[in-house]
Length: 117
Image 1 (tube, rainbow, N blue to C red):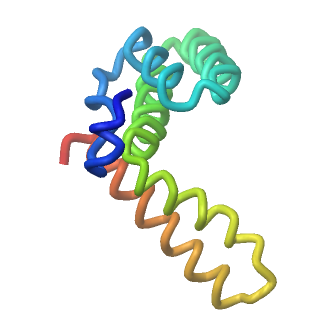
Image 2 (tube, one colour; image 1 turned 180 degrees about the horizontal axis):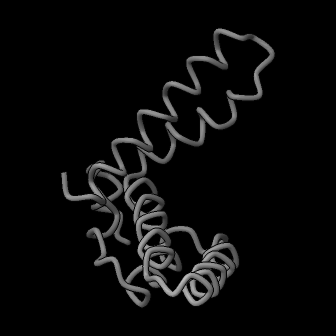
């Protein structure tokens, strides 16, 4: 992470490949406080994959964390999402509704990036 990336408003890191080592490194770089959650989700995905005899849970895990990274590597987007998440608890129903719309738009956009579209 360099100040030139942050100052320019661009991504802090390039989007990583959707692999365990690359995602783990991206989480460690961008949101290290979420590493325990990352490892818990990883373990659950691998257990579920074994139970279901399917790689789908692992692919879903990669996509889930790809979305997190896509959001967090863009400071402006991450700030907007975190503000919306806080506003969801606002007592004003209009503010809550706007926050839900904002969060949904951000997450859907990140899903499109991760999916390659």
